[in-house]
Amino acid sequence: MKPVRVKLNRKSVRQILQSEEVRADLERRAQAIADAAGGGEDFEVSSQVGKNRARASVITATYEARRAEAKDRTLSTALEAGRG
Image (cartoon, rainbow, N blue to C red; front, side):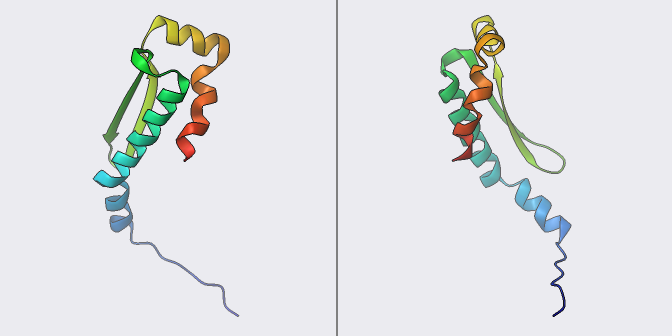
């Protein structure tokens, strides 16, 4: 039996990865991570569409959040919340 070969259409894959639906899902996941880390004003969520794909990020926005991340790894341990 011959192995199955799949050839992806790069332009179509890029369109999917840059779609508003993918960006919205990534932002939802980033917000879930921020909420699990403590939420509020301490964490900032942003999303944007780049050259090849959409992306989202969560950053510490206050001194208290940076200190909590350095001491207790609050943001790092909240990553699991973004998997659902």
